[in-house]
Length: 391
Ligand SMILES: Cc1ncc(COP(=O)(O)O)c(C=O)c1O
Image (cartoon, rainbow, N blue to C red):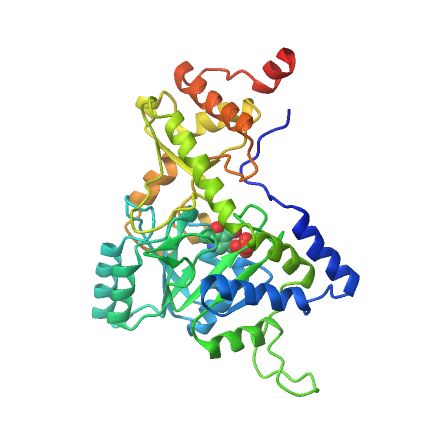
């Protein structure tokens, strides 16, 4: 039996057929029918125009450019996120200010945002933009966040890289801010192997995104360029994978939620382990099944559990390391950070692939239970060996 991985691609014959079509018609570069159709299908799904890009990072980068971020600007960003939410701020020569999470959603704390905006406004140093991340498949609490940002006239980039298929008060993740970014990396709920997407209600910005993603080439045949551009377009081959994947998004969401709730129910009698909060305001896809440990009650800490699962042939990961603790951002400004530190220190992501079989999920459940019962020095038996000797 194989090692159980955290979150792997889940593909089928539909994807292969769209890729085959790309080969058959020789559209294998960054233009072609799969791209046009993928963008249209996403627009139908989300209700906003979309541009397919080479990565989620590219979408965050171009999104921040659309919002006018320039050298010397400040940009607010949650500290608890993957580094790709923050790096594009620095690509543009701007400086991030990292804000803490709220316990109830793990996302940007609206109360802290209110304080930070008030304080920065008093110093005449408002941020050029606020990045709001929808962590692990759950939207941030957008109503208070948007009303604050509107009050101060600061635009919002929604980093929905982890939240395709999530909703907030009935609206799809990615459509809540002025511009939204998605990732289709191989570990995401749907994938194009690597890829991303930018969405916005602003038609001019959509056109500008296409322009920038194709090296900002001025109109005409002369290869003339008046501003800096990027090679950020998605390939027609990969867009074919995306078309097949998008058709199954609802099933993938359902399956990821099912997996998270099965873990939750299986650990209900164990002390000191609980599922990431599920806010009532929307659908949390549980892209990754994240749990918080209380080590004294659970019997071991997060790193000991990761090591125990590893010995049992199971991949798990810590919750993101906050940006203010990264060597890269050690000198960046921050507002709070203790909540994010606690979530990161105690949080673990368990295998969550939509293709995870019931037997494999049971292996994970048994390994977690065994670790909790046996304590930190326990050798979790390698369930692969047990199984192969029994079968
Ligand atoms: C929150 C967040 N933002 C941005 C990204 C960047 O996406 P990509 O890997 O497609 O560049 C990711 C994931 O990888 C992410 O988790």
